[in-house]
Length: 338
Image (cartoon, rainbow, N blue to C red):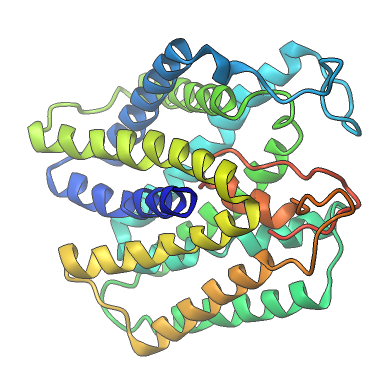
């Protein structure tokens, strides 16, 4: 069940760009898409927490304290940070993502976005949270070369320079979001933190809508259907399936299986939207995915027998959308829902 749940999560997240394209075709605007997505997801996650109260409890030590090695934080500060992650970080990342989706193919967008696990590794090294090993250096070179091939191979009319810039901006924003979220992920249960992030994003986008004259919700039933698919399938179901799969398989296997996400996006885009990737783009995408897979590989286990979980693991979990914590700053990280 564990691998199946991880693949289900990756497929659900990978379908989000396709649902977005189909929603645009029915007249849904990016502003309406984002507002409905986060509002509905926040409500659904709130219902999950009401039905399953046990999901509200964060991991603690035997004395009921937060994990060792983490600075003490007040409850109010943790909640404010979680809401801010949604209101500023996740809302901005999603806005850039869906703005880019208006300008370029979903498959190309997915490949550019999926540079974020490597960017998280770079950010962690620069912040002193991680060290640059030869393995990670090789992964960075492969990812950079792959991204360059993806961009150089985009000779069709679907390629848009501004769209590519927005896509890369989405990856950078998501990287910052993950690194900040790592400071509070130990203090709240994953589902509770995700609900707060969604609520923060919904509040931010709702406030923006009020200041800019509101959003048009007058689209037809098919528009609402695709928005429901984004909120339910590509947000709530995808995230909960990832957490369930992660619990059963461990971070390394879950992270590697998560690289299935952009593959699903590209395949669905070909089947439903008629999009195609050039051979050069396919080669570049393979390099990007290979670099992410390399970052998940770990040479061994810690003394306790538990695989170390670090930056590489936080990257993919962050995509979904809460990053998983590093157990020890000294343990060797790999780079995890999305």
